Length: 272
Image (cartoon, rainbow, N blue to C red; front, top):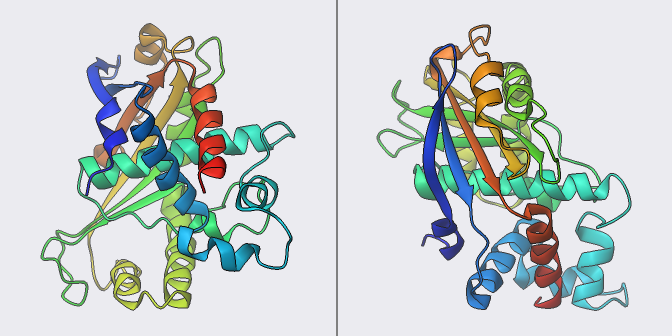
């Protein structure tokens, strides 16, 4: 089932860079519907802690559901680097939603629940998505696809700060980081006894013997104030990227995005 908040992510055009690369531009609108916001907050909360596990996990702490989430699970709203981690997690989850619900990839969502330190980002590839051409992890096809997306967030910036280029540059490292990320993802899935899903990840661990299509992605999630089409056109360079022919770019911008992030975390805690 496609979450209702996905309909508030709207493609409004594209920028063609001076090199000829296409950068689709998306507008994230803030829902005014309370039901949509509540569903989005629940979707968001369950990345960190499944609702059915919340009471067992907070048992012994003496904390309410709200205080447990705000004090031990969610990144801090004011103490650095908590706000930037919140912005980064929000942006990664948004791009994960786009890959899964708009493009049809399967995207594991387990890493946020395994954080040892709430005010830190999870190391490795930001977002990985998988597509099995024949729907069978045990019958690998060279048409299977793994996509690795690097996501950069600047939700409060007042001017463009080469956010997309930063994502492109950091995407270069994903070719080497993917082995570690795939291993960590499979371990988490096996620990949760999600053996079928772990087999999907396993299918992509040995490209030498079982080749597949490897796509890269770079996304910038930024404020309306910092969106600058001219600078993105002039300053975005992909020719030196090792996977330039299979590099997907996107920019998402919106108004008051950090306030949206705060509202989602607050609602996720208050409505738990």
